[in-house]
Length: 541
Image (tube, rainbow, N blue to C red; front, side):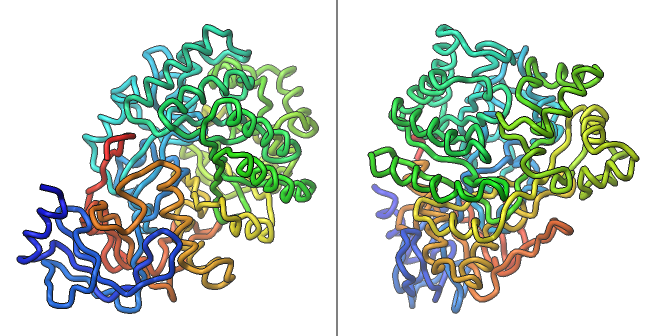
């Protein structure tokens, strides 16, 4: 007996939940139809006019939009997802599924030798979770399966993780044997349920990889129809060359390419945006499956140690901090941060006044959260470069930052592109970037409704069907009978973000109901405490 046949037998009694009278957008980009949705045993049992049928719980969605649950293709919830009291902000935005393992820097696979290095490296990004009772991707996902999750979790094999297992944090190109080991580890992670491989070619240790290495790890993912989700090597003065690199990697490996948080940083580089989009279009026309995500803000956020030149990261965080205590090395770093254009140099491209501290680990420096590095230098009576390097040492590198890099016009140009999907890249902790609390409602309210960048059905496609296609999800991302009931009900006239850079911990408005696997996680805009999220492994649904 199929699910729908079984559901039909039970429908005569009652649905678990019945959503009536809503404007139903199915996730394909089609305009709305006014239909009812009957939910049974966590799945969508019927989409039709259900006038005489009943639900144990009924939601009147008259005047409201009914959409598939939003899928966030770029997050850093890898450990925070186990804290639903904090992580709830994602379902409060309508996000029901997230893609972990981003930027090549995540929590699995590790070994007893590499685990302490990654725990220190990722403390600023993923929070201080000292116990990692896993080594493999399978063990990490099993750990999440035993946790209380507000939303669904999917995973990418991080390039940095497999690289350190093969050769440590060494600042050099890999040998053929080491590359082969990395490819084997990627294949292992894919078999254990990952949806692809990620890299952050700006971040250590991925920054030390050459194209051959990238091609081979991508071939390993492509064997399982996995995707390559990548923070490109340079998003500013060398962004066009960086795009050429990853497009060629996809061309040579056969992998599907997804560019993370696409942008071109710095006012002096704005002329590169149109050619960058043209490169992606040309690759797609050639037959390479290319997509990208973007957060709807003109500022970035990442770990503070990304201000350092690549050579500084050899050996991992502990060795970085020791080098910063050497006066000669420190002077070289200060000069390179201000002048070196050969890497994606945040300081040179944006200036200390546009780099703001988002979070620190210690209470003694808590008052610096929300201040620019320029302001911290003035407060301490030192050069901003010294203030920055001192802060890294004081906090054992557990610092995150916000970088103000762009203009609204460019955000709109990228957002309107058909290959675009919405991704938050939200980072928890301290005084975070407002994208953590506001990304999806901001696209719906500010950009779709107020700026009229695109109609609401296109906004929804960019949040649902498009990322579902990227991940090859079979039973999510679209409102279809038999699919899991991940559903958002929102007011199209009220939905909006409230988070700001000055006050980022503000929940959005207008997200009325959110269902995760058929359970109500948000009711009248309030998190219910439901922990119905599942770990979704590739090929499991």
